[in-house]
Amino acid sequence: MNAGAPDIGATGSNNGANFDGTEGADDANSQAAQQRKAFETTLGMIAMRMVSDAQADLDSAMDDTEEDV
Image (cartoon, rainbow, N blue to C red):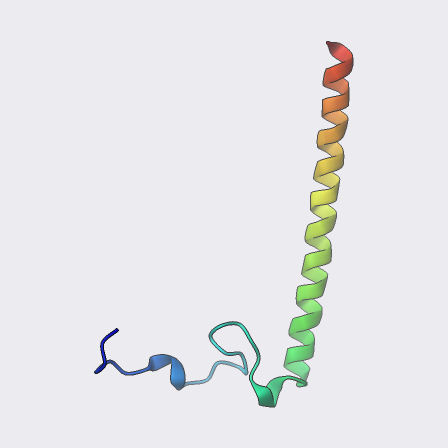
């Protein structure tokens, strides 16, 4: 790390989120933080549903393959 280099992560607007993905102390209960958390939760549930459906399809295909042998 260059000691003379400016710390560009220390300034500027970042919409209440720190660069490591965590929320700043002032924005922990803000509407934006609550919306972000709700979006992430919903996105996670959708992803889990897609993975579950894909696993069910794979299981079905594997069962069909075993029956054909």
